[in-house]
Length: 194
Image 1 (tube, rainbow, N blue to C red):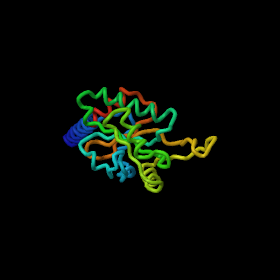
Image 2: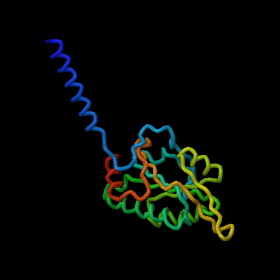
Image 3: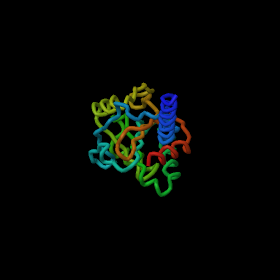
Image 4: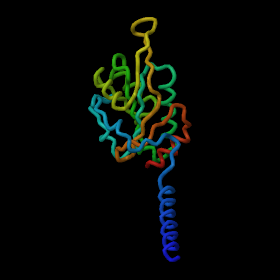
């Protein structure tokens, strides 16, 4: 009888610890991809001509989006949404860094990125590489992009992955934000990571 009581008491205690552990881990609105073995890092050039890696943004929650400046809908909408997310963070907005990685290195020059990306928020950073660097970064981040011919060779569009990756202040990949997720839900997730 005493053995059954002790076993039940231990099981109850372990169950309580497990419940505490589950309650202490944050619940996110975005897809939690903590521990994924991809999207580990990048080495690209920013709109000011400086080489950048993820380590340059340690201490901040980093949101990384792949797109292109001539995108008619998804890219400008996402960037405008991220500007609103930053505004919702208030004074904590300084701890939030948005990185826009172009999947159109042929047309998205350093000068064009320097005009386009900060037009949404002056702190946002545009990143680019040559064709190989772009392809390697996209592969590391499991981002798909493909040129779609237009009426002329220079008026093509690009189909691409529309979600965003989020890293915590320690540079660990944590979340995948789906396209068209609400601004409030994204801002809440960013605050949890801070």
